[in-house]
Length: 357
Image 1 (cartoon, rainbow, N blue to C red):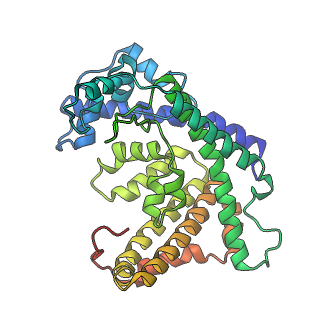
Image 2 (spheres, rainbow, N blue to C red):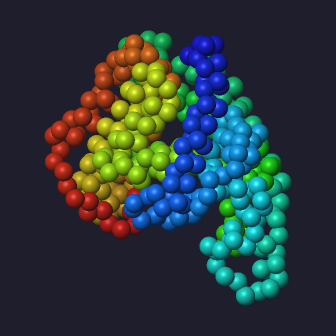
């Protein structure tokens, strides 16, 4: 499925992609911290803002530190500075946690937590995904051998292919998370049971991604830190259709292969169509007994996984001819269905009961 040139380009471009994220986060943080933002800062912007321009040494260490220069994660400059001076382990890192009156617990909370368990655990997870990807080499192509094969087999096959491809990224994300934790980066405070949390540099949520029942949650749980970057530099700053603007920026950030733009175009259209259908279907299926509710949840999970695979594989195929061939195997139904929903289904205000997905 991949040529040697595609693999070389992928590994060469990834450091540049991470550098683009870092180079864009710093000026926005300075812009917010020095009063350049005309809008009131939200909670995240207030936390990440910089009240002065970083020094050259701080800037270079942020851009080219050894544990994130190749594949990330692109944490913010504020998080990097806190990591460099150790303040991420101080009491300020746990200010958002519940206050405790026990002196011994408070003293223990301020100690630097051990990185050994999270680093080793994530390393084992990375090796597991690596093994799963390597030993499933026969399922790396989305095209069935026989175009006349049953349509359900086609859908099952390309969904499986997409999962196997995701395992490659899960391996990279988990390995990088392990290295970051071993360096001391990734600590984000303590939970309500006074246990250290090491999720600051985590770029994946395997369980959330694979069990997601809508496209929005799938996008938010995949390449988490890149999604945060898009939110910080685009979604929260543009006034015209921030969703479309974020998808366009994401496509441009990935590169100039046509498959990137076709992928995010499909994602954007499918996301808007899914949102419209959810407003119509959710109140009916989730408000009339557990049978209909669970039928709806299973159906939305299946459709979400199918559309994630259908759109994501276009990102991998790169060329319009390959994308056309892949879509033609499925009679363009996944491409046309969201368009028909947007054109034919009337808009409706959300009446989703609170607490339902």
